[in-house]
Image (cartoon, rainbow, N blue to C red; front, top):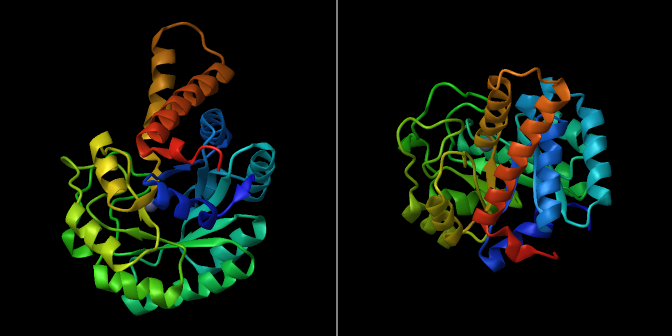
Length: 287
Ligand SMILES: [Zn+2]
């Protein structure tokens, strides 16, 4: 199985009433935490590399490593380019070996978003890769860890428009804006579950929830019950890794660099395993 696309796992998740985690890896220890937790639990996983994190990485080398690791694991692994902003980035990502891409034209007017997404679908499907797009806009800043954000109802996804968008573009998955934000929240997140159910009733495409960090177990279960099949998860994992390092340093004993990395990785692995259980991904064991 090994390297997979969204088409290999999300329809199955939809049928089983569960979701697959899309965990961001911005370095090797994050990637290993994600891959090890998923392999131990024998569930499919989406390892996401955000364009915003490219500056931390030798991207060609990192994708080569992910492909090699995925190939030797007995679980489906989607190697996903997260929040690609242009056709140029998407094309080079596909050339490097991403098996799946997200084009984020959500800040564009509808027609431009649809046109850009169509181009990406053409480029990706020719190579067998899958495509996620976004309609309505999930606010907040990726990588923003200090200031909380509130969701803006003006940016929520319109259900009828979502159906039209999927029909027009032929995307494999659609990210929707239903009350979540990227990064930390200002106040409590409030999911628009009725809106989500309405979107689900208008289109059969697998739906994606961005801004998963900060939501409670109950929120995830309700969203998954109403059609979310892919959950993007980064901020909480990143903060957990840092917290593990902080704890280690605060013991006041000398610490070697490898111990710092190992402690961050171990903590992130625990968080990933916990989220896999919350998403119900174990329903897809053996896929
Ligand atoms: Zn996102």
